[in-house]
Image (spheres, rainbow, N blue to C red):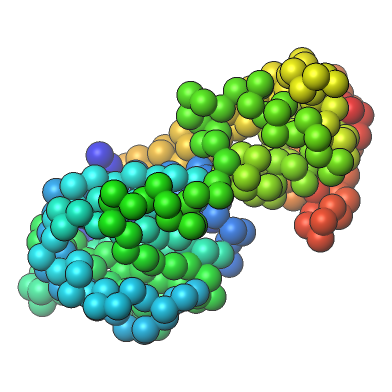
Length: 326
Ligand SMILES: [Zn+2]
Protein backbone atom coordinates (compact mmCIF):
# COMPACT_ATOMS: atom_id res chain seq x y z
CA UNK A 1 0.00 0.00 0.00
CA UNK A 2 0.99 3.59 -0.60
CA UNK A 3 1.76 4.44 3.03
CA UNK A 4 4.65 2.00 3.00
CA UNK A 5 6.17 3.77 0.06
CA UNK A 6 5.79 7.10 1.80
CA UNK A 7 7.62 5.85 4.85
CA UNK A 8 10.36 4.24 2.77
CA UNK A 9 11.02 7.54 1.07
CA UNK A 10 12.79 8.42 4.29
CA UNK A 11 10.39 11.18 5.19
CA UNK A 12 7.83 11.49 7.86
CA UNK A 13 4.13 11.41 7.39
CA UNK A 14 1.25 11.81 9.74
CA UNK A 15 -1.60 9.43 9.88
CA UNK A 16 -3.82 11.95 11.47
CA UNK A 17 -7.10 12.18 13.22
CA UNK A 18 -9.28 14.87 11.79
CA UNK A 19 -10.64 15.54 8.33
CA UNK A 20 -8.11 13.27 6.67
CA UNK A 21 -5.28 15.61 7.30
CA UNK A 22 -1.99 14.07 6.34
CA UNK A 23 0.69 16.33 7.61
CA UNK A 24 4.22 16.67 6.40
CA UNK A 25 6.89 17.00 9.05
CA UNK A 26 7.47 20.52 10.22
CA UNK A 27 4.26 21.88 8.76
CA UNK A 28 2.03 23.41 11.37
CA UNK A 29 -1.64 22.72 10.90
CA UNK A 30 -4.85 23.76 12.56
CA UNK A 31 -6.45 21.74 15.33
CA UNK A 32 -8.75 19.31 13.63
CA UNK A 33 -12.21 18.26 14.67
CA UNK A 34 -12.60 15.09 16.63
CA UNK A 35 -11.92 11.95 14.59
CA UNK A 36 -14.86 9.82 13.60
CA UNK A 37 -15.02 6.35 12.08
CA UNK A 38 -13.70 7.19 8.59
CA UNK A 39 -10.68 9.04 9.99
CA UNK A 40 -9.85 6.14 12.30
CA UNK A 41 -10.21 3.70 9.42
CA UNK A 42 -7.86 5.89 7.35
CA UNK A 43 -5.35 5.81 10.21
CA UNK A 44 -5.70 2.01 10.39
CA UNK A 45 -4.98 1.70 6.67
CA UNK A 46 -1.99 4.01 7.04
CA UNK A 47 -0.53 2.01 9.94
CA UNK A 48 -1.19 -1.46 8.54
CA UNK A 49 1.72 -1.56 6.08
CA UNK A 50 4.25 -0.48 8.72
CA UNK A 51 2.90 -2.57 11.62
CA UNK A 52 1.60 -5.81 10.14
CA UNK A 53 4.16 -8.58 10.63
CA UNK A 54 6.62 -6.27 12.40
CA UNK A 55 7.94 -6.77 15.93
CA UNK A 56 8.04 -4.13 18.65
CA UNK A 57 11.77 -3.72 19.31
CA UNK A 58 11.64 -0.87 21.78
CA UNK A 59 8.70 1.02 23.17
CA UNK A 60 9.17 4.47 24.66
CA UNK A 61 6.43 5.56 27.01
CA UNK A 62 7.41 9.15 27.66
CA UNK A 63 4.51 9.74 30.00
CA UNK A 64 2.79 7.44 32.44
CA UNK A 65 -0.65 8.52 31.35
CA UNK A 66 -2.68 9.66 28.39
CA UNK A 67 -6.36 10.02 29.17
CA UNK A 68 -5.83 7.21 31.65
CA UNK A 69 -2.62 5.69 33.02
CA UNK A 70 -0.84 3.43 30.55
CA UNK A 71 -1.06 -0.28 31.47
CA UNK A 72 1.39 -1.69 34.00
CA UNK A 73 4.64 -2.80 32.32
CA UNK A 74 3.33 -1.33 29.09
CA UNK A 75 6.65 -1.30 27.22
CA UNK A 76 7.76 -4.71 28.53
CA UNK A 77 4.49 -6.35 27.46
CA UNK A 78 4.86 -4.99 23.92
CA UNK A 79 8.58 -5.44 23.35
CA UNK A 80 9.39 -8.65 21.50
CA UNK A 81 5.82 -9.27 20.37
CA UNK A 82 4.85 -9.30 16.69
CA UNK A 83 1.82 -7.59 15.19
CA UNK A 84 -0.38 -10.28 13.69
CA UNK A 85 -3.19 -7.98 12.57
CA UNK A 86 -4.59 -4.48 12.86
CA UNK A 87 -8.34 -4.00 13.00
CA UNK A 88 -10.88 -1.44 14.06
CA UNK A 89 -14.05 -1.42 16.14
CA UNK A 90 -15.96 1.89 16.01
CA UNK A 91 -13.25 4.46 16.79
CA UNK A 92 -10.86 2.00 18.43
CA UNK A 93 -7.79 0.56 16.73
CA UNK A 94 -7.18 -3.07 17.69
CA UNK A 95 -3.63 -4.29 17.23
CA UNK A 96 -3.37 -8.08 17.58
CA UNK A 97 -0.16 -9.25 19.18
CA UNK A 98 1.65 -12.58 19.10
CA UNK A 99 1.54 -12.53 22.92
CA UNK A 100 -2.22 -13.12 22.85
CA UNK A 101 -2.97 -9.57 23.93
CA UNK A 102 -4.62 -6.82 21.92
CA UNK A 103 -3.35 -3.25 21.99
CA UNK A 104 -6.47 -1.09 22.08
CA UNK A 105 -5.83 2.49 20.96
CA UNK A 106 -8.13 5.52 20.78
CA UNK A 107 -7.14 8.82 19.17
CA UNK A 108 -9.24 10.91 21.52
CA UNK A 109 -9.72 14.46 20.29
CA UNK A 110 -6.30 15.34 18.95
CA UNK A 111 -4.35 12.11 18.56
CA UNK A 112 -2.31 11.27 15.48
CA UNK A 113 0.48 8.93 14.49
CA UNK A 114 3.64 9.96 12.74
CA UNK A 115 5.62 7.30 10.93
CA UNK A 116 9.32 7.77 10.29
CA UNK A 117 11.52 5.28 8.56
CA UNK A 118 14.79 4.92 10.41
CA UNK A 119 16.94 5.86 7.44
CA UNK A 120 16.95 9.46 8.51
CA UNK A 121 17.64 8.99 12.16
CA UNK A 122 19.96 5.98 12.27
CA UNK A 123 22.09 6.80 9.27
CA UNK A 124 23.01 10.43 9.87
CA UNK A 125 23.38 12.47 6.74
CA UNK A 126 21.52 10.04 4.55
CA UNK A 127 18.33 12.00 4.72
CA UNK A 128 17.58 15.46 5.92
CA UNK A 129 15.83 14.80 9.19
CA UNK A 130 13.76 17.69 10.41
CA UNK A 131 12.82 17.82 14.04
CA UNK A 132 9.05 17.72 14.07
CA UNK A 133 7.43 20.73 15.68
CA UNK A 134 4.96 18.48 17.43
CA UNK A 135 7.57 16.23 19.02
CA UNK A 136 6.88 17.56 22.51
CA UNK A 137 3.54 15.79 22.33
CA UNK A 138 4.98 12.48 21.12
CA UNK A 139 3.91 10.56 24.21
CA UNK A 140 4.50 7.02 23.00
CA UNK A 141 6.98 5.88 20.34
CA UNK A 142 7.07 2.37 18.88
CA UNK A 143 10.36 1.30 17.32
CA UNK A 144 9.49 -1.55 14.98
CA UNK A 145 11.74 -4.34 13.70
CA UNK A 146 11.23 -3.16 10.09
CA UNK A 147 12.87 0.15 10.96
CA UNK A 148 9.68 2.18 11.26
CA UNK A 149 9.29 4.53 14.19
CA UNK A 150 5.68 5.17 15.01
CA UNK A 151 5.08 8.13 17.29
CA UNK A 152 1.72 8.73 18.93
CA UNK A 153 1.26 12.47 19.25
CA UNK A 154 -1.60 13.86 21.29
CA UNK A 155 -1.47 17.49 22.50
CA UNK A 156 -4.76 17.32 24.40
CA UNK A 157 -4.21 13.84 25.78
CA UNK A 158 -7.71 12.45 25.39
CA UNK A 159 -6.30 9.46 23.56
CA UNK A 160 -5.78 6.12 25.25
CA UNK A 161 -3.87 2.84 25.03
CA UNK A 162 -4.78 -0.35 26.79
CA UNK A 163 -3.70 -4.00 26.65
CA UNK A 164 -6.46 -6.58 26.76
CA UNK A 165 -6.21 -10.38 26.44
CA UNK A 166 -7.70 -11.36 23.07
CA UNK A 167 -9.97 -13.97 24.66
CA UNK A 168 -11.43 -11.36 26.98
CA UNK A 169 -12.11 -8.72 24.36
CA UNK A 170 -15.84 -9.53 24.45
CA UNK A 171 -16.00 -8.38 28.04
CA UNK A 172 -13.93 -5.25 27.54
CA UNK A 173 -15.99 -2.38 29.04
CA UNK A 174 -14.82 0.15 26.43
CA UNK A 175 -16.18 -2.01 23.63
CA UNK A 176 -19.07 -3.85 25.21
CA UNK A 177 -21.52 -0.94 25.24
CA UNK A 178 -20.96 -0.05 21.60
CA UNK A 179 -23.80 -0.41 19.13
CA UNK A 180 -23.51 -2.05 15.71
CA UNK A 181 -20.71 -1.24 13.30
CA UNK A 182 -22.43 0.94 10.65
CA UNK A 183 -20.58 -0.69 7.76
CA UNK A 184 -21.08 -4.20 9.12
CA UNK A 185 -23.59 -6.73 7.82
CA UNK A 186 -25.66 -6.67 11.00
CA UNK A 187 -26.53 -3.00 10.66
CA UNK A 188 -29.79 -2.52 8.78
CA UNK A 189 -33.07 -0.60 8.84
CA UNK A 190 -34.75 -3.09 11.18
CA UNK A 191 -31.96 -2.79 13.70
CA UNK A 192 -31.90 1.02 13.53
CA UNK A 193 -35.68 1.22 13.86
CA UNK A 194 -35.59 -1.03 16.93
CA UNK A 195 -32.94 1.16 18.53
CA UNK A 196 -34.81 4.41 17.76
CA UNK A 197 -38.39 3.22 18.09
CA UNK A 198 -38.89 4.20 21.71
CA UNK A 199 -36.60 7.21 21.79
CA UNK A 200 -38.13 10.57 22.55
CA UNK A 201 -34.96 12.38 21.52
CA UNK A 202 -34.22 13.95 18.15
CA UNK A 203 -32.73 11.92 15.32
CA UNK A 204 -29.52 13.92 15.70
CA UNK A 205 -29.19 12.94 19.36
CA UNK A 206 -30.12 9.30 18.69
CA UNK A 207 -27.54 8.86 15.95
CA UNK A 208 -24.85 10.49 18.08
CA UNK A 209 -25.48 7.85 20.77
CA UNK A 210 -22.73 5.22 20.41
CA UNK A 211 -25.12 2.52 21.69
CA UNK A 212 -27.46 3.10 18.73
CA UNK A 213 -24.74 3.01 16.09
CA UNK A 214 -21.01 3.09 16.76
CA UNK A 215 -18.44 5.50 15.41
CA UNK A 216 -20.58 8.42 14.22
CA UNK A 217 -20.00 11.93 15.54
CA UNK A 218 -21.19 15.40 14.79
CA UNK A 219 -19.91 15.64 11.23
CA UNK A 220 -21.17 12.37 9.80
CA UNK A 221 -24.50 12.48 11.62
CA UNK A 222 -25.19 15.85 9.93
CA UNK A 223 -24.04 14.54 6.56
CA UNK A 224 -26.01 11.28 6.78
CA UNK A 225 -29.22 13.12 7.71
CA UNK A 226 -28.77 15.43 4.72
CA UNK A 227 -28.30 12.45 2.42
CA UNK A 228 -31.44 10.83 3.85
CA UNK A 229 -33.38 14.12 3.53
CA UNK A 230 -34.37 13.91 7.18
CA UNK A 231 -34.45 16.82 9.60
CA UNK A 232 -32.09 16.49 12.57
CA UNK A 233 -34.94 17.82 14.73
CA UNK A 234 -37.33 15.01 13.79
CA UNK A 235 -38.18 12.63 16.61
CA UNK A 236 -36.07 9.50 16.41
CA UNK A 237 -39.11 7.27 16.88
CA UNK A 238 -40.60 8.43 13.56
CA UNK A 239 -38.32 6.09 11.60
CA UNK A 240 -40.30 3.14 13.01
CA UNK A 241 -43.94 2.12 12.94
CA UNK A 242 -45.83 1.63 16.22
CA UNK A 243 -44.84 -2.01 16.21
CA UNK A 244 -41.18 -1.01 15.81
CA UNK A 245 -40.87 -2.00 12.17
CA UNK A 246 -38.67 0.17 9.96
CA UNK A 247 -40.27 2.57 7.48
CA UNK A 248 -38.88 4.31 4.39
CA UNK A 249 -37.07 6.86 6.56
CA UNK A 250 -35.14 4.15 8.39
CA UNK A 251 -34.09 2.63 5.09
CA UNK A 252 -33.00 6.02 3.70
CA UNK A 253 -31.06 6.72 6.86
CA UNK A 254 -29.15 3.44 6.79
CA UNK A 255 -28.27 4.09 3.18
CA UNK A 256 -27.21 7.66 4.00
CA UNK A 257 -24.99 6.52 6.86
CA UNK A 258 -23.33 3.75 4.88
CA UNK A 259 -22.80 5.94 1.81
CA UNK A 260 -21.33 8.90 3.63
CA UNK A 261 -18.92 6.71 5.60
CA UNK A 262 -17.85 4.73 2.54
CA UNK A 263 -17.26 7.91 0.56
CA UNK A 264 -15.25 9.41 3.40
CA UNK A 265 -13.10 6.30 3.75
CA UNK A 266 -12.51 6.29 0.01
CA UNK A 267 -11.50 9.98 0.21
CA UNK A 268 -9.13 9.16 3.07
CA UNK A 269 -7.57 6.40 1.03
CA UNK A 270 -7.10 8.68 -1.92
CA UNK A 271 -5.46 11.24 0.35
CA UNK A 272 -2.86 8.57 1.18
CA UNK A 273 -2.34 7.93 -2.53
CA UNK A 274 -2.11 11.64 -3.36
CA UNK A 275 0.51 11.92 -0.69
CA UNK A 276 2.59 9.29 -2.40
CA UNK A 277 2.15 10.81 -5.82
CA UNK A 278 3.43 14.18 -4.72
CA UNK A 279 6.33 12.59 -2.85
CA UNK A 280 5.29 13.99 0.50
CA UNK A 281 5.06 17.57 -0.63
CA UNK A 282 1.31 17.93 -0.47
CA UNK A 283 0.25 17.77 3.12
CA UNK A 284 -3.36 18.50 3.58
CA UNK A 285 -6.45 16.92 2.23
CA UNK A 286 -9.76 18.60 2.95
CA UNK A 287 -12.85 16.50 2.64
CA UNK A 288 -15.79 18.33 1.14
CA UNK A 289 -18.93 18.21 3.21
CA UNK A 290 -22.44 18.96 1.95
CA UNK A 291 -23.73 20.73 5.06
CA UNK A 292 -21.18 20.48 7.88
CA UNK A 293 -19.69 23.90 8.67
CA UNK A 294 -21.50 25.45 5.71
CA UNK A 295 -24.08 27.70 7.41
CA UNK A 296 -25.39 30.36 5.04
CA UNK A 297 -24.30 28.52 1.90
CA UNK A 298 -26.60 27.19 -0.80
CA UNK A 299 -27.73 23.57 -0.31
CA UNK A 300 -25.74 21.45 -2.79
CA UNK A 301 -28.75 19.28 -3.70
CA UNK A 302 -29.72 20.06 -7.30
CA UNK A 303 -32.83 22.26 -7.59
CA UNK A 304 -33.29 22.48 -3.79
CA UNK A 305 -32.45 26.17 -3.48
CA UNK A 306 -32.36 26.02 0.34
CA UNK A 307 -29.78 27.68 2.57
CA UNK A 308 -27.79 25.64 5.10
CA UNK A 309 -28.72 26.51 8.66
CA UNK A 310 -26.83 26.03 11.91
CA UNK A 311 -28.67 25.21 15.13
CA UNK A 312 -27.47 23.90 18.49
CA UNK A 313 -28.70 20.52 19.72
CA UNK A 314 -27.50 18.94 22.96
CA UNK A 315 -24.69 21.46 23.08
CA UNK A 316 -23.31 20.71 19.62
CA UNK A 317 -23.70 22.51 16.29
CA UNK A 318 -26.02 20.91 13.80
CA UNK A 319 -25.97 21.90 10.12
CA UNK A 320 -28.87 21.07 7.85
CA UNK A 321 -31.03 22.28 4.97
CA UNK A 322 -34.52 23.22 6.22
CA UNK A 323 -35.95 22.94 2.68
CA UNK A 324 -35.05 19.38 1.64
CA UNK A 325 -34.61 17.81 5.09
CA UNK A 326 -37.97 17.18 6.66
ZN1 LIG B 1 -31.61 21.30 0.49
